[in-house]
Length: 149
Image (cartoon, rainbow, N blue to C red):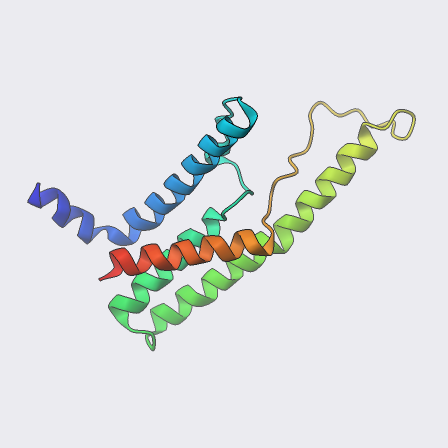
C-alpha cells in the first residue's frame, strides 16, 4: 500500500487533475440521470454544464504548482496564464459557439426556411456560463490545496 501512495504522489500532477475531471464529469452524468431519468454516457466526455471541469483541471494544476514551486516561479506563471486562457475559452469562445449552434439548429429545423440537408443536430452545450467556470475554478483550487502539499 505504501508503494501505491508513493507512485500517486510522484505522478500527482497527472493523477489529481485527471481525477478532478473524472469526478466532475461523473457528477454531471449522475445529475443528468437523476434529473432526466435517462442514462446519457456522452455526459462523461461531453463539454458544458455545472461545474466546469476544464476550470477545475487547470486551477488544481496551477494551485499544486504554486504550492510546490512557489508563486514567483516561471512554471507557476505559465500555469496561471494557461488556466486563464482555458477559462476564457470555456466561457467565451466555446459558449458563443454553443449559442450559434442553437440558432443554426432552429434555422435548419424551421420548415421552409432552410433548404439545407442536415443529418444530425449540432451540439449546443459546448461552453460554460461565467458562474460554471467560477465554481469549477473554486473546486480546482480546493482540490489543489488538498493534494498539493
